[in-house]
Image 1 (tube, helix red, strand yellow):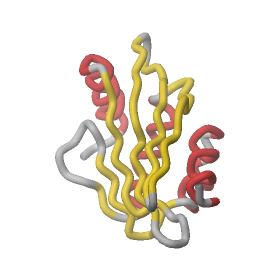
Image 2 (cartoon, rainbow, N blue to C red):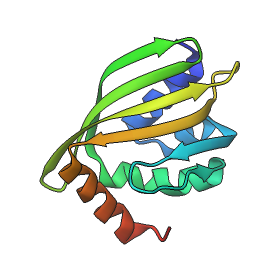
Image 3 (cartoon, rainbow, N blue to C red):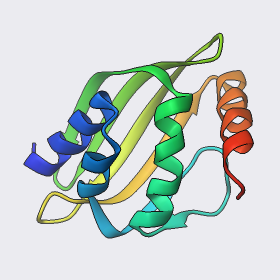
Length: 124
């Protein structure tokens, strides 16, 4: 596993938004489970991730699968009184910076809770 991907995981687990930013490629593409259009660029992505660390309480990575140039970080978290499971699917460049981040969340009721909480914080 590359150092920067470990850095991304460690930053998320530590809820360290500055370290999360440092682990993202400047042209990262973020695909949220709650919106159709991807967010492009480090600043747009961080605009969302700053809220995600508040919305997804008790986030814990429970598994990590690695392939050449990609990682799937499986997590559990809570949103209000709902438990959710999800995957942060990361593609990384040769320097280990995250170039694509796709988040998937289940169950649908958990995703709805995430979307509601994020919608209250972010104007899409």
